[in-house]
Length: 225
Image (cartoon, rainbow, N blue to C red; front, side, top):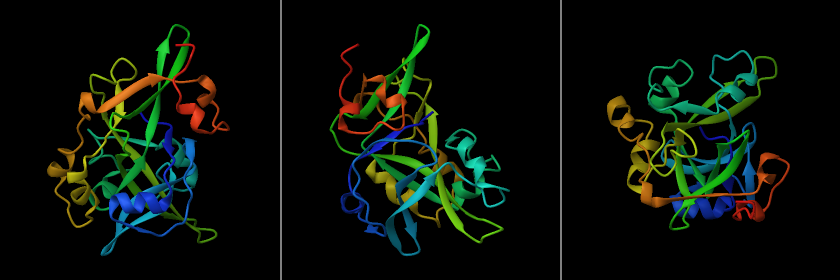
């Protein structure tokens, strides 16, 4: 499961890190990004690798309305090649979601405590994603959307949640983004839990529960824990 992320690098900074061309000019500085919002993603567009913005929550081309996207914010890596909502995108329309971290909630007693998960080296993480294009039959408006692929939690994440987003190392970026590469077995072999020693998880303020709250203070360790 992955239902909240941070993106505080600008589109220019993300483009530099991923060897991409920025098609959008966005400042970043977002510390509580939620589903249905626009998010910066990296895709390969023909011969180019680009940074653009897609809506979080995949809307398949055959969907009757965009509302289905709110139910398709994640795709299980184990079944992504077979599920009708994801299988076409898995073969030809893959993307990376650059994040500086993500949030997950741990059940404690009657409530849940939010945790931030970040890279131990402080560098951005590249989440594996799928994207799709949907056109409104009434207005002709095109909406490009995405979902985050998940896998079983590693040992670091398991006490917090049983699932985690697939985080791809730099050496896998090119293969994942290449729309001409359609070897399902090879692609699924990339969908592994991230190494335990490369992530850090810690509790943060419950203010992150409200998507209206934003700011770097959301990533600070919670005093209550």
